[in-house]
Length: 363
Ligand SMILES: Nc1nc2c(ncn2[C@@H]2O[C@H](COP(=O)(O)OP(=O)(O)OP(=O)(O)O)[C@@H](O)[C@H]2O)c(=O)[nH]1
Ligand SMILES: [Mg+2]
Image (tube, rainbow, N blue to C red; front, top):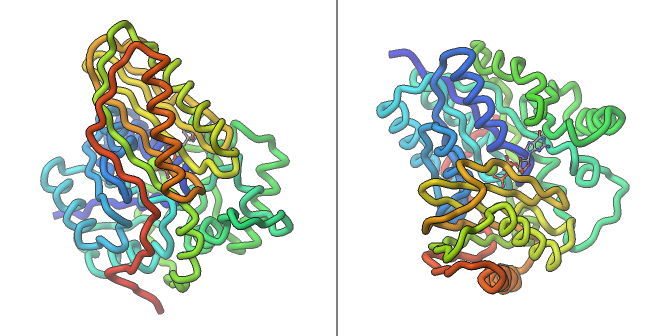
């Protein structure tokens, strides 16, 4: 039996992991005739990312309730289920954006314990060029809300850095980011890409299709050092049945939801807010990262005419209670503004738990 290629695609919240995973999967399928399955991961339950990847047509499994690293056995069994059910050539796994020490808790255990089943590619970490300098600059002003130890650590943990959103910044900014990253991980290999023009996607595909293996020795930094930063994050996941009484403009309602979030929190606190609307004949996904608001796809019509579902995932630097109140306020406000009835089907709001990995490899 040949082994399945596994790519772990790490990186901070909102950096562009899901977008890149789906774009890689599409390219591998259409241009290289390779089948790809995707594993998503989150603390909450019902993920916008999972829906997005399934809607793009890829076999997708999600691991909920915590990072791969603390659910390592579940991660292995999900990967095996994907292998048995769809026989993919490649699995792309996206861990939670706040995860730390993935090299020692996932990548290294995978390559060491299951070398015959999985061929583990070098660990790739995605860095958002729009936010990189704000996050990584050493001389910036630090406040109680600053979260920068985790993103810097994620770079140290990587084997290859993928710079995303290069379409949104100029050449000089990319060059400065490269210098910052090189300061954190000297000599590090970097690939620049963008979801808008898919630049250099072939270079990433080549890495996936090559036989290059993950080899880096895990660095295993003390997770307690990151617990404080994780505790600054509020996590909200809500799902609602949505029934329009008239044609509902999905673009307009999602934009309004994001604007309401932006009215409540400053750009530096908005780590990543995602909303997805879906019915039988229409779908729309929108994301807000800092002050960048983007529609990530409208499927079918822009108007929702039949009952469907609304999923709201927000990761914000905020106490969970305040976040819950804010998100409930957003829901209440759009219920008033639009011809819809919303019925809550699930809601969770919390602060992510510190991770205690089930495996921790270091040398
Ligand atoms: N302009 C531009 N936008 C991008 C690019 N990559 C991602 N985005 C946008 O950035 C937002 C966040 O992207 P995601 O792929 O959801 O980020 P993520 O890393 O999976 O986020 P989490 O799952 O929350 O950790 C979306 O609106 C994407 O469309 C890019 O290269 N260029
Ligand atoms: Mg994602």
